[in-house]
Length: 137
Image 1 (cartoon, rainbow, N blue to C red):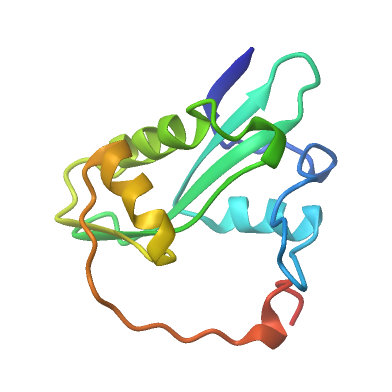
Image 2: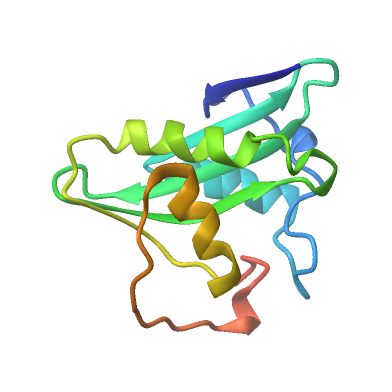
């Protein structure tokens, strides 16, 4: 069974492997733990049989007007079970009352965000510094 909960300080990096599949230089579990710690809001999907995190979503916010969802990840073996949709709805609940909540994604994922919670495709700009992809600066 998958349990959902907000991130808290009881989590260790030992429960955070298997994410960022396909990234050339992925963040380590230790770096992922720092990401979760530094996020304004973070929600987790945990496999109750192993205690491992199988999905997570983060949001960074000013807590007044806006939030940005930079990461939503579900391990490949757990995809297609509604975990990503549930995580997205949970993080949006945490951002309730904010005027704008934005997420940047590849075009092939826009329909997921739209069907999961009604987010609308938009245009935007971005800067990617691949040399910092692992989070180790």
